[in-house]
Amino acid sequence: MDAALQILFGGLFQGSLFAMMAVGLALIWTTIGVFNFSHGVMMMLGAYVAWQLSDWSLPLFIVLPATMLIMAGVGWLLQASVVRPLIGRPNIVLVVVITTLAAASLIENGVLEVWGPRSKQLPTLIEGNTQILGVGVSMHQIAIILITPVILGALWLFLNRTRLGLALRAVAQNEDASLLVGLNVTALYGLAFAIAAALAALAGIFMGGYRFMSPVMGADPLLKALIVVVFGGLSSISGPIFAAYLIGFFEAICSYYFGLYWTPALLFAVLILMLMIKPEGLFGAKTRGLA
Amino acid sequence: MPLLEVESVSKAFGSLKALDKVSFKVEPGEIFGIAGPNGSGKSTLFNVITGIPFGPDSGRIVFDGAEIQRKAGHEIAWLGLARTFQRETSFDKLTVFENVLISGAYGKPGRSPEEARAGALEALDIVGLPRSSHGRLAEELSVFDRKCLMLATAAAMQPKMLLLDEPASGLTKPEIETSIGLIRKIADLGVTIVLIEHVLTFLMSLSQHLLVLNQGQVLTIGNPKDVIADERVIEAYLGTRKAAV
Image (cartoon, rainbow over all chains, first blue to last red; front, top):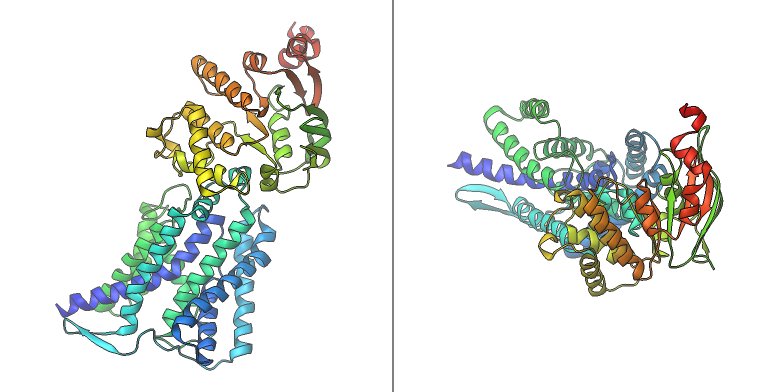
């Protein structure tokens, strides 16, 4: 019973984190068709911005939205500077990999310059620990497990129930037709990057509350987000969300039975096997679309 | 004053001149046909007029008094210029209603959500797509219904001018007849129509003026009956008598 509960909480916690990390990456891919390799750095920068605001003694209910807003602006700027000028050029996917990696390196070094190399930690979302059916769980983890579906649900509502969401879903499917019906495609690309950066910042805040922050803390989450997106399928944002929870549970089970050391190798083995059987991803289709 | 004025417009892809100093004018309220053999530059002409995916290399395009050859695609749409494609439906993974709603909402600036919804429903009624189909994904529709959906999407923008790229391609004879009726219905709403089509009977039955393109150049413009009797047009479509012998 204890083992099952530990796996359940571990899976939900990891799945929530992976979902928050991956959803922004998937949003950008499905909308613009490029991979943003500075997504991990956006998580890191979000955590540092939140740390700075907390250091100025601002309360959490201000720190969270303020950080997301600031990071949305950073995401917009990132898109305007290293992605937008390249749209329509040949080999854009590869070129944007390089430009976003360059931006990531620049931001990492900037953070190192501003905040220094010493590790930092964010305050937890909720202080303390609790026991659920005899299993000890931190309140920070419970908060992440509960907040993530709310945020993802809000994103779903935004994409499926608002005019702006409808416009983003349209751009994701057909850029030329979007222009023809009067959609300002460049502004929508900026919006996709802004939303992705805000969500990455929230993932960074989640991470900064239970592990030490450093300027390179975004590298591992970026890799995880890529695995989740490829595993779930590149054609939608719902696929990676389901995949995030599946991978979360898979990692929790592997960690429990085989240990942390073997978990990444087993995860990659499953990923490769799955891609051999279904190259478009577990929940993927052959065309892109935000749903 | 013409609604659309194309002046000496050229577009090249490497050494290939897709359009070579093309000039013509379209008057408000008319149906203007464009014909020409495959590869004559018809669709490229629509591309450079709408700016999607590219504008012209040189020349001037004036729409409703404004120069548009350097404007972004969505800005040209906001001026009241709509276009349909030859084959694809705009957004396959959106429902029929969402496809039309999006052009109603964004195709004409300043509309309220209620106006956009009402406009979308009206456009769907014009083309005769029943309410029962509004919730279906566009990709599930038949070829003819997709063509109707494209017309509804364009009509929902309430454009001043509609560019139709081969609306009859892939349709059966009765469907072509229905399409002619639909295009007339949209024209009767005051929309100026520019029409590319291979099916000459389709063009003849609709157009007040006919332009023939050949190898990126204007071969002739005029009354449709005179144009199709022109030796140069017959030659461009069928080849010379000598070549045939």
